[in-house]
Image (cartoon, rainbow, N blue to C red; front, top):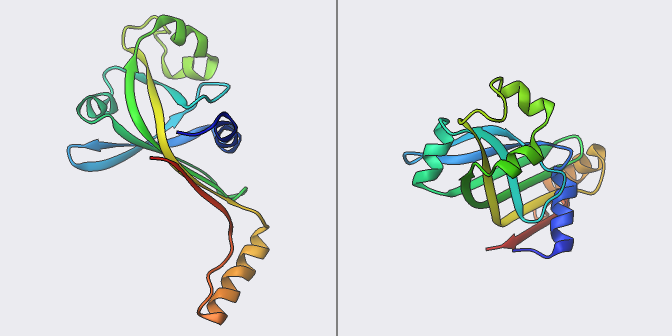
Length: 162
């Protein structure tokens, strides 16, 4: 797990990206699909709307272990979060996070019995953040190729949890 300060750091990295790729196991084959964040803050749990009838719901019922990846190439931000998935139809939470973007995906409305929230309790992760411009990154890569025994310094990398 991570400290409240670290959770804020993760949230700062992913909040504007909005869409993460959720990886589940479809039988024994990893499968990814985009999921849109609906919350305004992060406390170690991520929330996504889904249909109860969606394949990812059946996949996480069999194996709750999931991974979410977020990336923003322009900003040089990459985040991988692993945790446990859980499906909920908590009406208070569905009401809390409902918005016009979500409503477009669920034309029957928030009271549709197929509407649910997928909760991901993050247990561990890793993130990368480039400190410098793309030009500097290219310089670091070229320098490493010339020196042959150096690796490029691309910025910050941190693992947590687990």
